[in-house]
Length: 94
Length: 262
Image (spheres, rainbow over the protein chains, first blue to last red):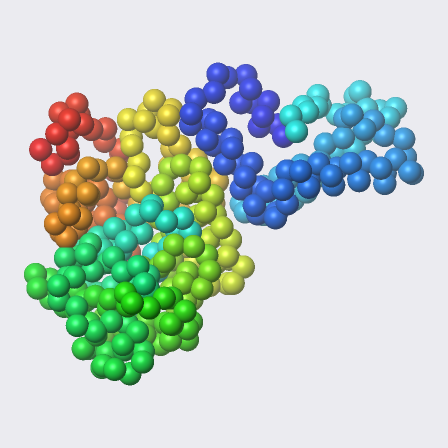
């Protein structure tokens, strides 16, 4: 999630940490999927796509986006040969 | 006459639901509105002590539902504000003693004789919350600026949306403006942004609220209290008045030591 990048640059205040943790729990609560389940989902997506297409598994991002209480699951899956130019740097916090 | 039914809810316990119910009920009565406050927290009755009416209770909501008294007999009238009534919760029963239909019938009956019916919902998101929230025309969600309380508020908002029940508005309670300034506490803008519902009031932390509950005299009666002012503002907003949000005042050192009323 890009928010993590933004917060990482600052030394975190209690307020920032609370907001960031809250954002994450609300996303998972609203979608009714735990962070661990999301990780499993990501692995399964990678294995399914890989059967048909060569992808850069390291750079796959599967995350939720939120817009006014509407949740969307967004998968960013760079094919292997174009991976360097299309995908932002991936964080692996999980 | 059919008054407006407002349910005060939160998900999480201990965030100030009953305090908000008492203060908004009394705040509206102070403006000349006729108000019935319903304590829907069956088995954990507390609105009576917040309003200082605990010694005047004869019947309760379950007695009325079971046909042991008439509706007006179950109401306790405030001595100082004759427009304010309390329908007490039963203390000896549990919340399963009431069905959703029972509560809707009682709330609408109260709305027949009042301008506003304010229902104090039990904590949680199960039966008690549901019967308190179902009849509402408006649900006020009380939260505190901390992760667990906001998370639970979000669950309540999600349930209301899923059921297609009343619209919700937010009260951020127990805010400490000096902590927000030092970036140590979630600020109300962030909370509103995350929950994506409209704000109806911000109530600052105030040591006088404990003193007020000790005496059964809600803080809304204290002219000089910032928390009291916040509740008076919310009461006016509930009537549709356009009351601007006052900038958050930080307590002075003197107030921090001696309390805001000193």
